[in-house]
Image 1: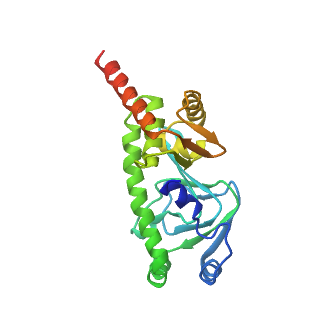
Image 2: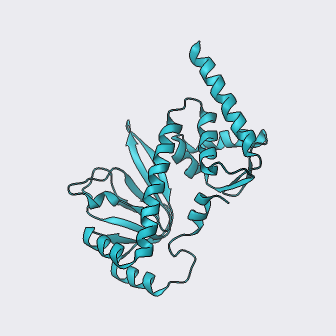
Image 3: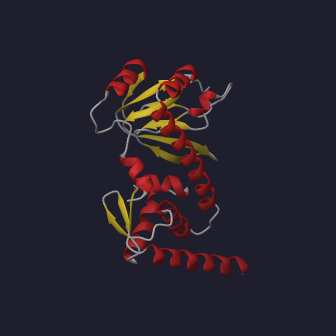
Length: 231
């Protein structure tokens, strides 16, 4: 299983007994939400960051009058971190995909938690570094023109150069967020790759039995794209 998949499974408290630290943080900063809640909207003043303890949250951004999914957050994810900057506004809209609990942290509270709980601070820092890397990957994927190239590129980046076989925990919604395509287009593309035996699908897991074969397909798709561009 990949590092990304393990990070998703290693959520901040979900599915695990609450330890004393978790109970203390929830009692002091916990904010419950229900499915469908708008946790914040794009353009609003950013005063609090949030640490997701339980549930799932989707980040959306309005692009040319259409809301695009940026990412799906899981337990342990920090979001709304722009609140640490004076005068910041929300760059996206956060919608609850399920019932859950998050920690609501203003700048003072976030600083106190980072100072008091170094292990949590280390996880937050690692997450922000990973998010920067993912953003760079997403920019590269979005620059591709071919739909199949976008999906294949995103899967290869998630595999992170592992020799294979590789198992990724990624839903159609997650994958659509990474490639900037609607969910139905992603499903059709993944189905095509499965029919061509490049992938196997088990629930929300995507198995890549031969990563090198998928890399060769990506190279072939790139060549075709270059040839079309020369015409």
